[in-house]
Amino acid sequence: QAYLVESGGGLVQPGGSLRLSCAASRDIFNGYGMAWYRQVPGKQRSMVASITPEMLTSVYVGSMKGRVTISRDNAKNTIYLQMNNLKPEDTAVYYCNRVVTSSAIGWGQGTQVTVSS
Image 1 (spheres, rainbow, N blue to C red):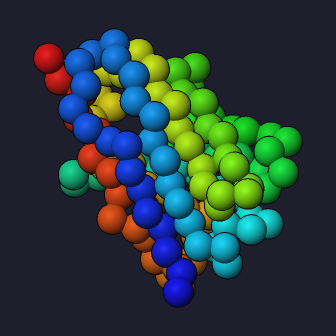
Image 2 (cartoon, helix red, strand yellow; image 1 turned 120 degrees about the horizontal axis):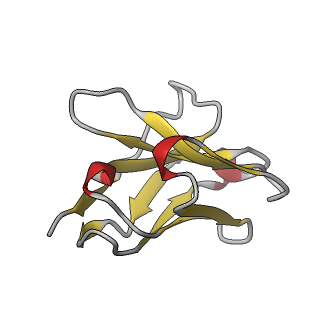
């Protein structure tokens, strides 16, 4: 059964760090570019970072560029997002998925990140 399970979110003060994890089923993960996305209520989900299947290239998008690092462990079918110097505007639900998403896969439940003092 296909799955995407995000974890690692929480409440953190501005300037703090979090490391998100996403465990995916083999059929979703193997051989595909994977990405982290985030969504704020009332706004569309947007990509934060992506990584190619063999980890040769990572791409960072938007305001989190320079503050996040995406990585993957192909042996564990897991991707990670290290987030540093978090800001209140980073508050969102964070999701992982393939770079090219599919309605057949859907989305996981996401993990809430709240940046607040």
